[in-house]
Length: 280
Image 1: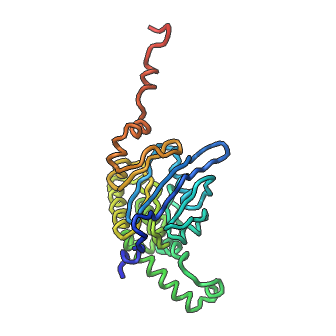
Image 2: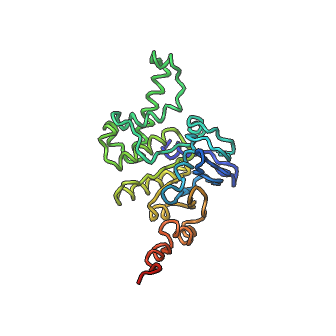
Image 3: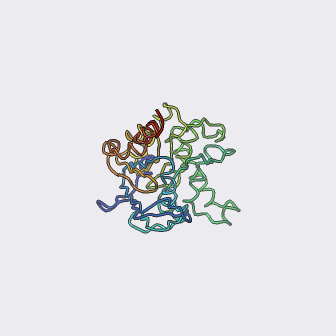
């Protein structure tokens, strides 16, 4: 069985979203960070989430993946309500990466991916301590799976290198491999190309397409508009915690409200340059 076969997910009833967020709202005291946002993701789809800094994108991601318990709304995955607990989210089939790299720097690339795989092992504490037959079998399977995933993301040659010694772009790919080790049906990537050079960005795009072609769904937060519009099937734009527009890349990038949200209208600058009363 190939890695693509192993990553594929069973088909859902036709037309039913894999992930569906309805009216998700998140308050921090008097601050309304996310306000009544709806989102649906279908099997095999790449969806982009964009918006200016402070738009609520990562907060919304945290609501979807159980790091935050939304103050309103509901998240459903594969047709079932999803408990706002990270472990339950991972077990259900959702994985994510973070805006800031969160690797175990003093562990090898292979060991980092193995960590992601342990959520699917079943050896108990006693078996693990005594290193019984079941533990040894699962450990070997976990190691083999981790190596396959490193090969899948293009890091097979550096499996024994310490994570902290890898180039920045390779560390980003290693995080994706670790997320894939959880056997997800959907993977959420928070700014996967942040800090990358153009070559690394192209490699990241190719990898995301490869993940999608394996049968997974992908949701991506990204500030690189060229990257996101060339990558995604649909794009959702958030502004001040609210959904501004959702549509195809062509529809979103041509919407005047999106342009205004990112670069402004220039009206304020014109007001600043206009002579005030008493000025020549």
